[in-house]
Image 1 (cartoon, rainbow, N blue to C red):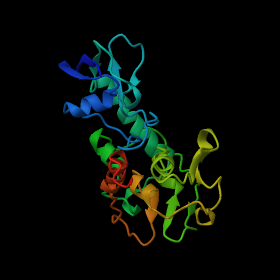
Image 2: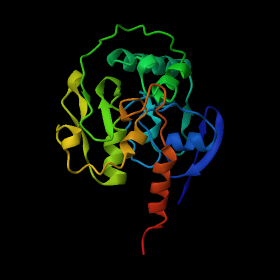
Image 3: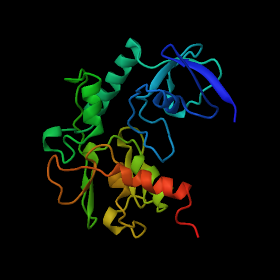
Length: 238
């Protein structure tokens, strides 16, 4: 495999062809914030938090779905990018109902961590306070659509790792939401194996285990990484 040479934040690096800008940055100790990205599942560039500046490109590019190219000059943390990222986080907070004090993921939430990282102490945008439902029809789990940020990690992890494809995305615009079993109540979906991978993948308190109290929701991301690596290594293939 050929090697590409490029610079990230002024530092010259050499990396394998086919590597994404996000992977190249992480392998070289450069932090780029993400929300929809999760190791082990495909990238979709949905949240746009990982946007970077690339010399010669007229628009910002999502690092998670942009592959490195020879001679790239990438900047990951300019004042423009910082402003965009803060605005994106503010939009997520304003668009949903994210009341951290009464959320099961309080203190274990990636959206909350991002707000701290980008320096958001208030939203400059008006809150919409949409009316959204909570589905607790499943025996073990529930989904609170008020806290969903539409990262689609649940959709991808259920499809690509569990192979059940219980989750999907329905509707458009402000009505867009994740659904189970073609918009059936979660508890009525026979295809659900109750594996809990969607719970571990969710970055907020949207998908939760029943019985979890406020600030108690910790996720086992190592479990997903273990499954993905074991499959790659054919540990379960005779």
